[in-house]
Length: 155
Image (cartoon, rainbow, N blue to C red; front, side, top):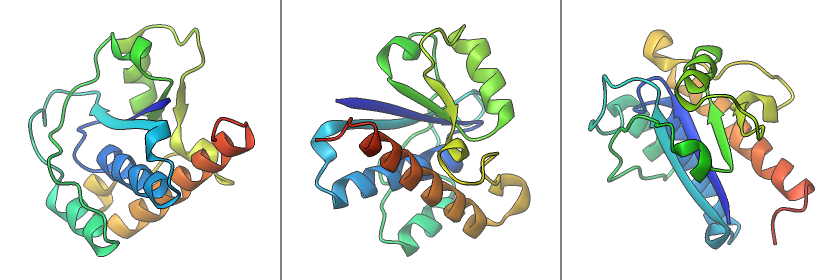
């Protein structure tokens, strides 16, 4: 089983979009039983809140439900539980390392590093451009799944 945790600042936009896009990708390929996928925040400000309505709407436009999601904060113990801990931007990476400690097992990565255009996932909280975020998240999740396949991690 491959365990992936997606992380952003509040866990109401980018990381739940990545969580549910990745779940949709693995389900459409019949690989759901090989994965555990979730998301979390580096902050506490949105803990308990559902996915932000414009992010929920963008997922729904692509037939993806995010029902039942409630934001939670990443905790130190998550480092041992998850195989990959995927951040959306450099600030997330800094905060993840602050919370989780040293990345001695090379588990912490940026989502866009799995694409041909490494960098940060567009933050719709500031840009209000949920389409750009959708494209980044979809491309990043597809790239991550491809890398896992190429590394022989999928059956």
